[in-house]
Image (cartoon, rainbow, N blue to C red; front, side, top):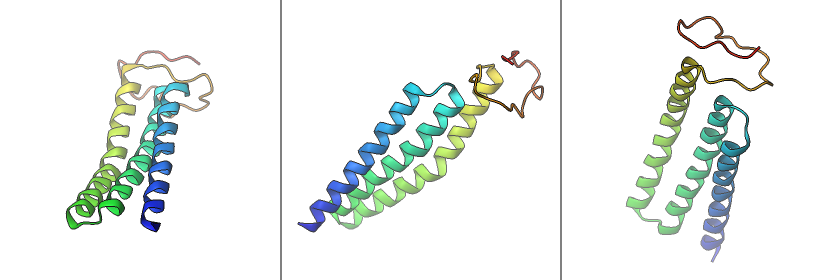
Length: 116
């Protein structure tokens, strides 16, 4: 009985964070901020859902699979986010009007001119 409540709470929390990640992708102003929302909230949400899977099934294979998947997400999400952000910046994707400091401005040849 308690096990079911733990699984339910983990699934609800995971679903909430995945929802927030999706909402962030839709509502946030530029690619760099969207990328931040999707990697942080998306990774946490997926991790909580896999934790619920491990608690629910409670066998060695499910727990191992969940732990390995969570570790994989924690290792690859920041690297993928960095690669996406750098590629978007180098392609000249415009930053939000609210961006105050552009520390990379002028560092890449061929970068498109950005709004000031």
